[in-house]
Length: 183
Image (cartoon, rainbow, N blue to C red; front, top):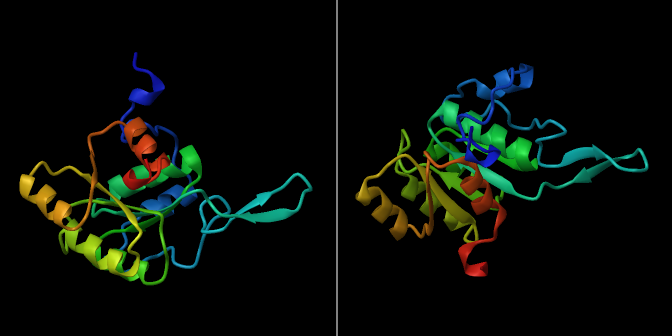
C-alpha cells in the first residue's frame, strides 16, 4: 500500500461529485468563462469565513493560481486538489487566449501552464501574460517530453518544470515554496 503522498493527481480524489463540482467540470468554450463574477465562500477571490466572534470576515487565500490547460479533466483534478489541500484560489483557462484575457483583469501569484494548448504554445502564453504581470511565477506543468517544447519555455523565461505524471506532493511542495530566486 502506498502512503498518502504517493498518490498521483488523478488518484487523489475518489469522492462523489457534488453540484458545484459538476458545474466546474463542464467544458467551457475557449475564450468564455462560465464562472466569471461568481465565487463560492471557499474558492472565490475573497474567501468568506466566520471568525471567532461569529462575524463573517474576508480573507485572501495564500496563493492565487492561474491554471492553463486544454484538458478539462486535468484542470478539474488539479483545481480540486489545490482547493482542498490549501484552499488556494484557482482560476482556470482552457486555452492560451483565455489565459491572456483573464490576466488583463486579474493578477496571480503563480501560473501553471501546459506547453501544448489548442490555440497556441504555452511559451507564447507566458510571454503575453508576463508582459502584464512581470513578477508572475510560472511553472510548466506538461505531459510533453519534446526538447523543443522545453527550449521554447526556457526562452520565455520558465525555470520551473513538473511533468503531469508527477505525484501530488511534488506539485504541492513546488507551489508552497517561493520563486526560485527567493530560495
